[in-house]
Amino acid sequence: MRHALPLDVRLMNATASVLFAGCAVLLVAVLGWWAVRHPAFSIARIVVEGELVHNNAVTLRANVAPSLTGNFFTVDLAGARKAFELVPWVRTAEVRREFPNSLRVILKEHVAQAYWGPENGTSMVNAMGEVFEANVGEVEREGLPRLQGPEGSAPQVLAMFYALEPAFEPLQVEVDALTLRDRGSWVARLDNDAVIELGNGSPEQVLQRAQRFVRTLGQVTGQYQRRADALEYADLRYPDGYALRLKGVTTVSRERALQLSRDAAAREKKKTRTTEGRN
Picture 1 (cartoon, rainbow, N blue to C red):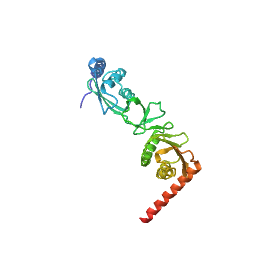
Picture 2 (picture 1 turned 90 degrees about the horizontal axis):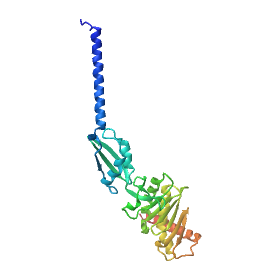
Picture 3 (picture 1 turned 180 degrees about the vertical axis):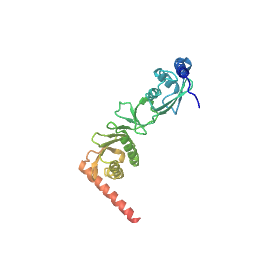
Picture 4 (picture 1 turned 45 degrees about the vertical axis):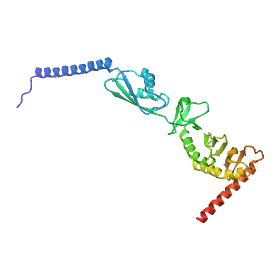
């Protein structure tokens, strides 16, 4: 049977344990204080990785490093990430510590698909439909379209542009600009400066309207000895036809244009039915 230690011995042991723990905590605090302030752990190197087209590692380090505070242990990684993502063209940044005094930054840049907003704006849209600010003078791709719409509509406008772009290819023209108005109607400008009022409705309805127009435009312009590239303006907001204006033709009334487009649509429908019957 073990005998209990005397009270004075137990008190001495408890005191020794408390003193040992206190010394250990103090030692850790001193080492932490030393590490936080020792120049060996100051951020001395920032390694930048990623496929960079509009930025370079030297410029990025020079622009962002002054905004970083603390050393290897105390630097705010979330703040560093935000600082890098504020740099033009940078979409995302991942920042990691590398012992003893380095940061490794992995960047992804925006890939511009279109200009966004008014002609004098500096906004662009990437492939995800995200709007970002950039120096438009640094854009390398030529012929990017200009898209416009209410706030938050960039993904919708970009998707509609992707849908309409191949629809106009038979006319050998490209969609140069596409606007979604506040009330939901669409208007496109082609690269020959022709303006197309596409109207509103679901994306499928707008696309079908455009496809019908493209299929029948040649028949309508042929009535005036003109080619499709003579188009200046078209209004597709009619249920069974469209109105248009042609270069060099001043006598096309809206009623006449509507009738011609209806006739062309009817011929197209009849042709389609005949082809299906033969098959």
